[in-house]
Each structure stands twice: as C-alpha cells, then as structure tokens.
Image (cartoon, rainbow, N blue to C red; front, side, top):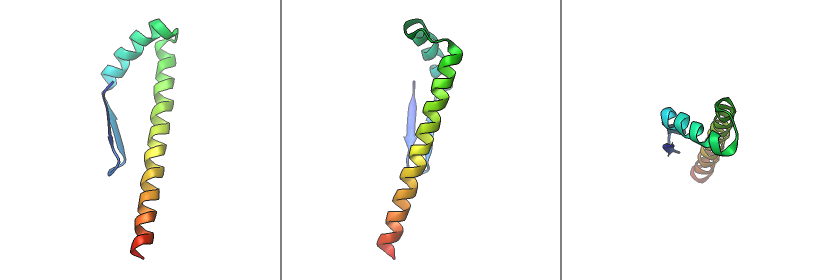
Length: 68
C-alpha cells in the first residue's frame, strides 16, 4: 500500500489498486472478506483525515498565537 501524507495541504493519497490487491491477499490470512477490508480501509482513511485536520488546526492556532 502506497501512502503519502502531506500535512501542509492536509492530504493523504494512496494507490487504491494496491489497497485492493493487499486486501485480497490479507483476506486469506485474516479471514476477512474483501467487503470487510473495504470498511477497514474506509474507517482508517476517515481517522487519518481527522488526525490531519486536527493537527493542521492546532498548528494554525499556535501560529496565530505566536503572531498576535
């Protein structure tokens, strides 16, 4: 799975094909179906986006407090 995090722009990019292939292989070992892995990926992506947003907001507030 190729994941790129850009905290300056609040963007996380990853290769969906690699995720699908990885989930198919992992499903054989973990016992989860591909649709279950979709939900795992969706929840992980949502949590990651929330962390990026909170981090970005905190950094902006700290910068504003230092300036003003």
